[in-house]
Length: 123
Image (cartoon, rainbow, N blue to C red; front, side):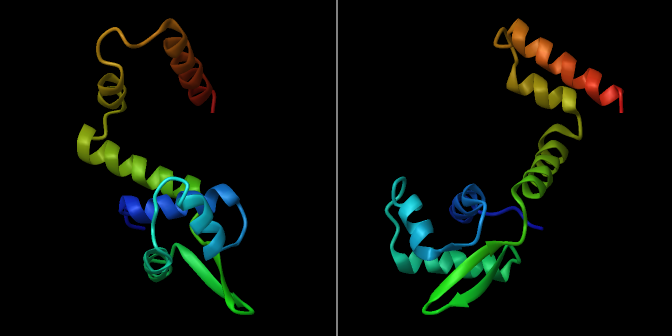
């Protein structure tokens, strides 16, 4: 699985949000609330996503129905692992430090991290 360009990821995020098979019209309706893309552009992105194995396409009358083949959690995990490996040399400490360097880490944030680590140690 490869990292998606932002334009294709935007479409996948919409499809994942629907959490069911969708038509181009539904995607276009959601997308054009944020970006005004033509139907042709959206169809081009959907075609690329199908070629990359992210979507399955079926016909329903005159409409294509798009179903996510890759789930959001799998993609996020893969993308996070790539970022961690490439930018932070597989160091979670370096990653967290870059997010909260300085005084931006509240006591609540620290407590949430401690609870998460405690849960992970318990497994």
